[in-house]
Image (cartoon, rainbow, N blue to C red; front, side, top):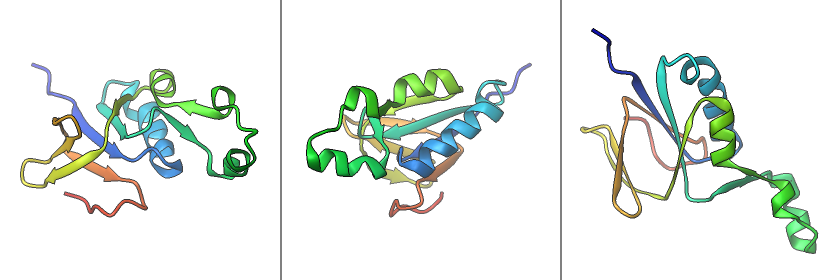
Length: 118
């Protein structure tokens, strides 16, 4: 009998959240030891030091932005598009805009997120 995989949900794909998803994907996701899910309201990650390019209009998002979905496929984790609108600590579930729930044993909000752990 196989035990179900632990589910780890990371909220926020900033530098910290993306790095955590990537590392956990390598260590646990690829080895099928856990299901890692990154949730972010954007399709892609824009490295903040590039914001000056946005201001000058020289940013080529196709080149300079990192697709969460493509990165997830390459690094052993899953990506869910959406904004977290509710956290149920008892049920260990977050509600994502469009009213989807993502259940996990461990919630990992990005460092700048106002949420706390379960």
